[in-house]
Length: 149
Image 1: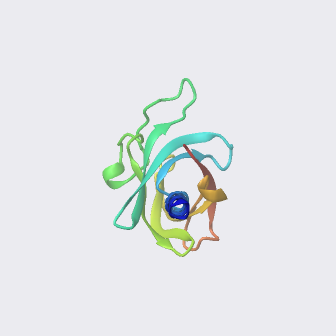
Image 2 (image 1 turned 120 degrees about the horizontal axis):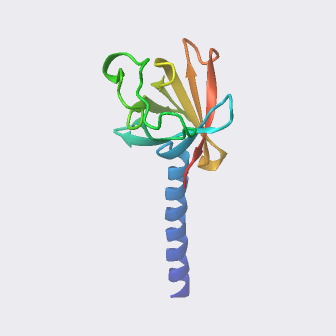
């Protein structure tokens, strides 16, 4: 009886740790984006997964007092032109490719520019390196986002 109980506990622990590992290795969740130039928080971005594709939407902006707290994407083109940045999908089409997620695009609402993008979950799922680039990944910049628990 005791051996059976121990086996069941071990099996349950394995399932729980596997689920935790899967959650930590996925970019799905809420992230605090950090400006790579100032080191200050910029926004909260919620990344969701649907049919193997990851997309990210801005939930909140961290703006200084006196700044417009609900800015619009003045420099964006197409459907995003003059739309509120809060609620805007800025990360689209990311798919798992080995240890990273790539093949998608990221919008910089400050410039209205759209870049190719890739991202890598690091530090046991606590951080996410998000890289926007033109052409090849070498020609870009990376921000490290922090998972919000």
